[in-house]
Image (tube, rainbow, N blue to C red; front, side, top):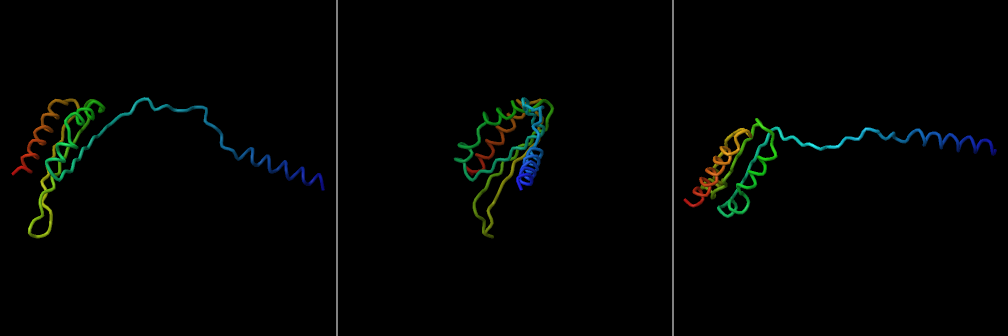
Length: 122
C-alpha cells in the first residue's frame, strides 16, 4: 500500500514539474517605437470643440514621433445643423502629407482649422 502511494505521489510531482512552462532566457526590451503611417481624424460639432480639442501643438508633437518619409493623413470632420430631411449636415476637410516636411504639414493643418472655424461662424 505504501509503495503504491509513493509511486502515485512521484508520478504527480513529476508531471507537475515537467508541465511548468520554461522561462525564455532571452527577454526583449522595446526601446524604439516606429510609427509608419499616421492617420489623424478629428470630428467636431462646434467652434468651441475646435478651440478646446484641436490644437496645433498636439499635431506638432505627433509629427515629432514619426520617422522621416512616412505618410501622414489628416481629416477634420465638421458636423453641422440638422437639415430638413432629418439628417445632419457635415463638411470634411482632408489631405495627405509626408513627415519629412513637418512645417508644410502644420501650415495646411492650420489653414484647415481656420476654414473649419469659418464654417461654423457662417
